[in-house]
Amino acid sequence: MGLNMRVQGEILFILAFACKVFETTGNTTLSSTTLDTSTSTMKFDLSSKAATLVPVEDVTVESDPPSAKLWEGEKLTLTCNVAKGNHLHYEWHFKTKTATVKLGNSNRTMTLDGVHENQTGSYYCVAKNILKEGQSQDIEVEVKVPVSNPKIWYSVHKQENNYSARITCKADRGSLPVTFTLLKNSRNFMDITRDLLNITFVVPVTLGQNLGDFKCQAENGKNPEHSDAKLLYVARVQDISLESRPHPLEVSVNEEMVFYCSVEGGTFLVYKWMFNGSSLQASLDSYSVNQQGNILTIPSAALVHNGFYGCSACDSFDETYCIKSASLQAKVRETVPVSIEVIAVAFGCFLLLVIVLSVCFAFGFKYRTGEYYPNSSVRMEKSAIWDKDMDEQLKDYSMDNSDLESITKM
Image (cartoon, rainbow, N blue to C red; front, side, top):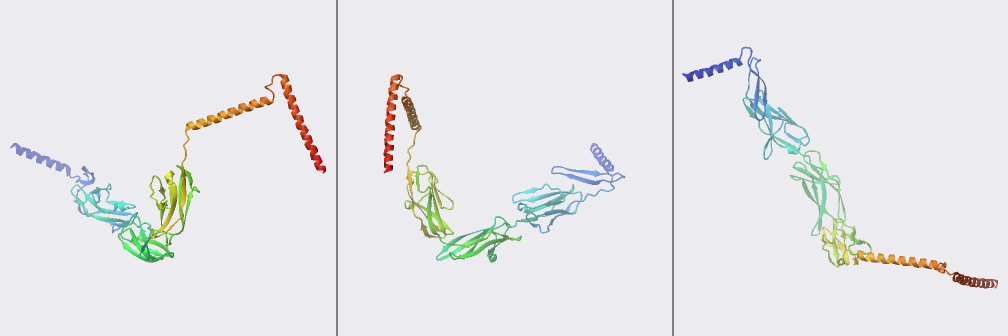
């Protein structure tokens, strides 16, 4: 009996609540829906006459451009469409290779301005209300990268008695595939399409002959890009010389010696250095050679560096063809270190000599002026002697003049 009374009470409570909600003045209408990742809150407008909440059905994504394929820097717009459903909340998701990321956009339309390569991937949207949620199929977005300006370089190789140039074209970035075209004097020479950002063309070469200007063109659906022009000319090495600093090569221990190996001709060279007729094995501590290989530096000469130095230059594509320079002799002198004590003794001796000379000069000056003859008779005697000497000198001078006159009259 008690249980039935309790059930009846609950039923009456529900009916009373229903009557309160659906009054004759109006029915509930869902005016807005606020959803976040943790809770869902719905607000009702009791003044409307009818409330209709439609479940979500058939969610799709529309893309502009329709193919969802675009170039880096262009604009992409994605729209989440729903066949049925109202009072909706939207979510956008982006799939990477390792995870799915929920994006911050909660609008029906998502716009990506200036897309980047790393935004390539799968996107889908979720539309939901309090009754149901629906998820769209993935849409594949492809952001293609225009090919960058290619670079060009070449190397020369020998096979038996024939020579060829391997011309390499390389772009730093760009979506694949890429079509590389080799241009000779601005005209198509040959082209290759590959799923690579670099390609190598093989061109026959005649030594000493100008084969023209070559360029690389790269294209992957956008505007073609071009490299700088490269002259294809291959010549053998000739006329070698060796110079040094200082010249002549006579230095003291710990001083620097620098050798310069120069050639008048040759396009692809390999330099080698010799010391006393043997190949020089350069080490970081004793020697250094520049990147090109034609400058040898000995930053701190030692006695072991005494000897004859030479260089040779070879064609990199045919190292059997080399020319050698004349040798230069380097002379390294050993220096005796001077200690501070030796310098101090030498300076003291010099100072003592200056003092002695000064005293002697002063004494001599006073002696000549009679300052050291206090007795007047002695001073007078000295004066008389001085006068007598002066008279004799004047007499000799007069005789010399008379002789001169007699000679003149004759």
